[in-house]
Image (cartoon, rainbow, N blue to C red; front, top):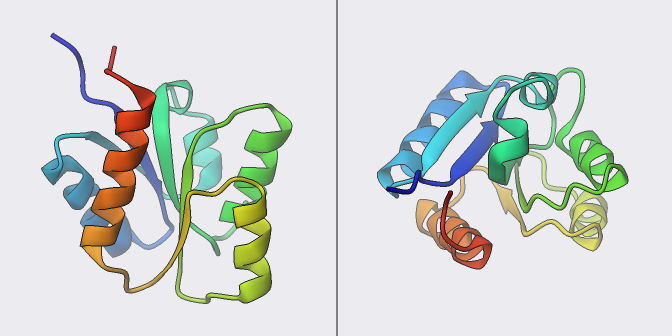
Length: 127
């Protein structure tokens, strides 16, 4: 029997982590939550993650910094950015580097669900 794909949620706001994690789990995926990008990068879940949902502004490494690091290392993990501070320049920058979406908080859970399903369908069956 195959395991559900791992979706990693990174946000310094615990309520957002929990809400997004619950949504991802309700869709049948394995939601892993992290309070920081650094926690995600040092986890055993990092290499197994098929999609990252990350806040833009966090203490330490920002979501955009995380994207730069992953791209520089050749890691092509689909990324969905969520932010309470949508700036066109930031959105354009992350989208140009391959982000799947840039969503403003509060966002529609149905939109996030569709994005996750799209990514996991493209990734193929889970291991």
